[in-house]
Length: 466
Image (tube, rainbow, N blue to C red; front, side, top):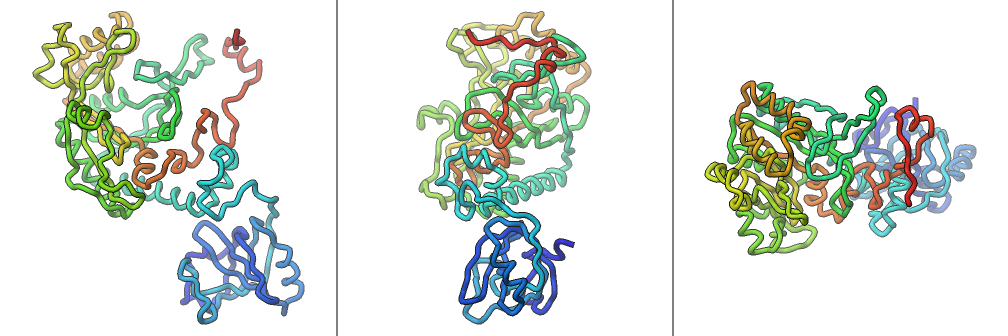
């Protein structure tokens, strides 16, 4: 047996107990002839004590170096008066070792893991992410991720939502960013796409009569990277039937207020969250995601803002129309007739809403169009021919012919929310194994070349750059 207890389970009530612990050597201190070792494991630290009375054990302890993996058996004792450490949960006790097993040795680490790690180059930290995650700050972030997801699951489940996993291998459709394509061995010359979002699937679940759906899907977008963007990310994904905008805004506001105050222990600057129309936000702040914090310090309250009534369409550089959100967004009722008036296309407003936190867009959603005729007109405005509409969207349009309820939803970047709420400068601080700023996968050195035989099996050929 390597261990009988975790460090966090031990306190003054365990004084005199014989237990076995296991973990990593965090640090070593020699006071006179006594060797003190801080043992670190997932739950925290505990101070080990080795004395010269047991010569063989003492000599073995003298060989210990940082990050060696060890298991120890011994007795829990009270620390001498005045030597307590209130900064750690085991600060009132120490562990007198009677047996020591060295389970594995470690080479010198490429960087220190005791501090915050902010001063270390990000690429180096990501190359050795499995070491960087030993850092107490990073371990705490992983625990926070779990707490927030568990809280969200319980919150939504209690309100009647059903968690449903949607496919990762799906169809390439115009969603706004480039798709990641996956060639099919069974259907040569055809490709799956990794989902930019489960947008169509969650709408199909509304057709199926689920009424309240959520999940934490992984989404994939082949786009340029920045401090708050990754190639793959998990998100909050929520869809509801028979709802209007106010129902969704109220739900998310309640969820995030409770998450921030109960789980993250963060103060919120203004409740209920303030609301502004898109045009007013742009006029006042020159951006649709303003930072409304009164004091922009790391400990300042969180400033949320709902941005409402976005334009439905925006013009691309080539003059063609593209959706500001996505083509399934419903239009403001009085603007539906504008679809048949080319000069008024740019005036159409959508039932879209974004939620901003400290200058970061963390949620975006809309009431969806559930009228197939309106959807068809939107696709036409976006430049799709009838043939393209049938090829790319016929599965959805056909489903809508069998009785689709009014519905709407919202999605939010899970990591981006944590980044903003915790005051981190980079989204990579809150993701276990993120893609780097250059688009490579931490630790795994992907993307990489593949065997020629794999390409041949898929009937693919790599063209050299000219």
